[in-house]
Length: 241
Image (spheres, rainbow, N blue to C red):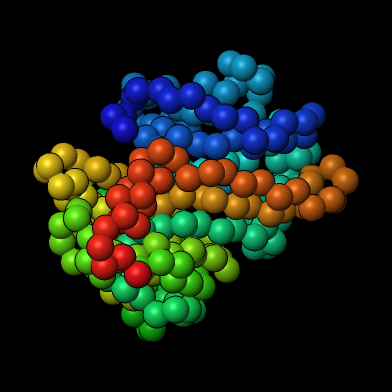
């Protein structure tokens, strides 16, 4: 998706305390440094009134995003995220074929130009981080060019910036498209057209305690059209496992 082009935003849950939406890929959650592009928060505030950002998704990551509608809900949700209580499930398309299941424990430290990096064991800036990754499907041969691809679910146990992207790259299976931590080239269809040109990472599910009454709230977002279409091409190819 081209930056700055708004896509329809689907509301997943709305009440007096919080708002959950299905964030489209290509949207900034908060205003950028140059202030030249409307953010998703600003767009939603025009519809729902004052909102507080609880957590963020990268520009090109799609899926479940929660915002608080009151200062009290914001404080409660922030504490829950700081303690790592919400359970997150992401879907990702990666290069290579990872193990059926692995737990990636790699400390993460700030890198250059806003990026993060896997930290050496003795790096004092490294913060402990862990992600469980399970292989859901594998495509050793496919019509999109390049080597094998796989669909995985990633279950982060901590909430570091770019954690899933850094961990997948450190494990040798980076996102299929990732200018910061892998290959920037888009996936191309049989006719040479770009099938997928953004980081294929989707926040599919988020389970958390409601900030007002403590009940469990499970929020889910379906795969966006670009990822669903790419998987349809991969699954229809001879040799897809």
